[in-house]
Image 1: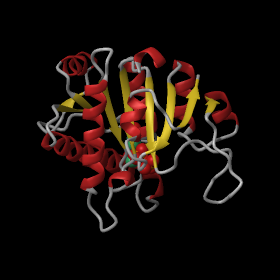
Image 2: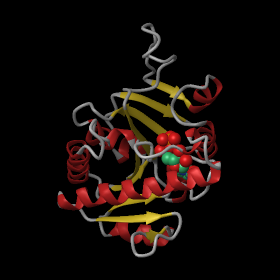
Image 3: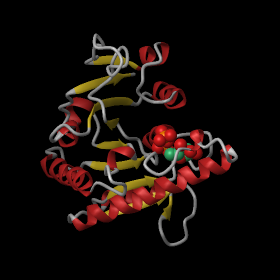
Length: 240
Ligand code: UDP
């Protein structure tokens, strides 16, 4: 992996919905599947340590921008708290699978999480822990897409892995257009120019400015996360 992408530190973004079960609550099978793939990827990393940081969305609980009845700032605060709940939950499932984890948040949550600090996160990576970044950027009017890019830049990650419900980046919406074709490789400039559905604009511009590449692939495809962490991406690479 490091030979291919020149990095041994990756950020994984999971959407909140991907973790939700159809009957409400969490889909433990999905969460355990992600955990076992990360264990596998860390074990198979032949270039030494593989640092894995994880950002989880909050859409399974709440979306600030669609809550029209209340003030947007307050709605976004609820959304950020939702991402904290998701991180605490997924971290605990990871622990039950035998992993060491740490949860950092962008605002203080008492004793529930630790306040984000680059030095503290580096210590956790050195200890082999999987690190969760909760609370997004800590500010309203942003998203966890922007949150994951921000943390990737701050933590010097080499690539962001976007595990999605679709298997890559398409030139148009594959649910609406049967002729839509998937890119194997696309530049972030083209993503921005053509408004391709990868990340929101703020996050995409940050990727371009700070030269953070993305890999977009299907979360539900068997072993997709483990393979992506080993540099085998069957989906789309977004270059910078
Ligand atoms: N959110 C925010 N600032 C951030 C990250 C998230 O205000 O830096 C809020 C926002 O309301 C968002 C919600 O948290 O709708 C859940 O985050 P996510 O990125 O999953 O939003 P989604 O893409 O699901 O709307």
